Length: 199
Image (cartoon, rainbow, N blue to C red; front, side, top):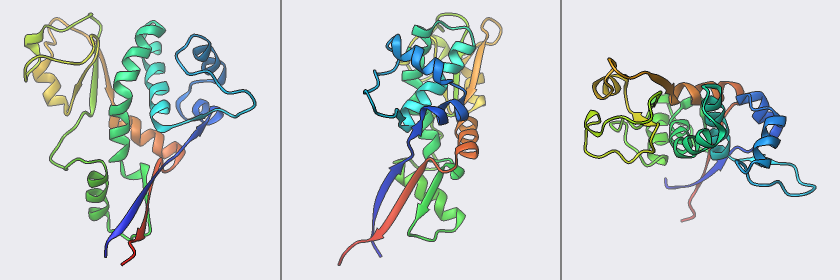
């Protein structure tokens, strides 16, 4: 049987952002005043999409690590889509309605909906070096296109092979743990609603 699949992403209120990722409503207003968030519309409650929620969470991580808000915002904009990609393949973060799938099939379904295969490691770990840049020769696969100050890796082994630990220190951020933690606090973040296609 063929199905039509509707993807529904959860939206978050300002209070839920404060509760789930620790960005208080006062901080949200401050970031809005400084242009890190779009201005809110009069007489409308603010709602955040999944990408905005990831952006806010990653911006807070960088500010907590001592980076200035402008740098934190730039890094968060670049890394937020990678966080959403991890959420898309995190079982507690995804709810499937209309089809009864065993766990093994659910995983395959999530990867298919995310346009990825299970063989693709993706970006699980982010590395934020304390130094401003890494030498290009330290990263495999040619020239790096990420912004100065952030590199992504599929595994810790891949990171260990690329980062010269004898001369650099930095912060490692686990996107899979971020997705799992958020899903355990907030419940499903993405719902796929399946309905049979008309013959």
